[in-house]
Each structure stands twice: as structure tokens, then as C-alpha cells.
Image 1 (tube, one colour):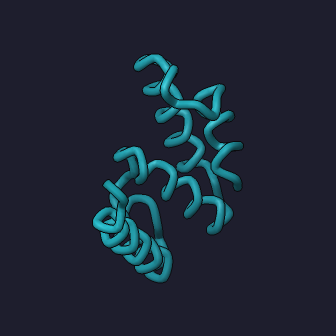
Image 2: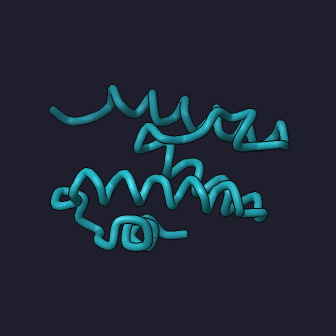
Length: 89
């Protein structure tokens, strides 16, 4: 799954600056439904990560049955949090 493909699928654009709030909310909801229906572990992780970046991911125990997947998600969250301090001002 490529980020541009996900943006296009859920928001009909790769430039989020022009996305209306209603369109954004509908795209997030569509992605959450897809996450709930997805059975492939890798794709579920990609969708959860995408939602996490928008502050809309479900809790780990809801999103992942497998403890390894929950741990990978925790690692992902830690990496994102650590990178927030590395941004150039």
C-alpha cells in the first residue's frame, strides 16, 4: 500500500490542503470500515498506521488480535513520537 494510493482512495486527492472537513471525515470513516473488514495482517497494519497518523486509529486491542501486531504498532507509535522532535524548524 502506497501513501498516495491511500490518500487518493479515501480523500479523492493526494493534496489534503483542499479537502473539505466533511470529505475528510467520510474518508476516515471509510478507512476505519476497511480496517475492520481487512483480513490480511500487513494490510491491516498499513490501514491502522494510516489512521494513526490522522489521530483516528482504534485502540490496539481492538485493531489487532495478535500480540506481535500490537507490539509492532507500539514500535511504530514510538518511532513517530521520536521523529517529531527531529523536525526542522
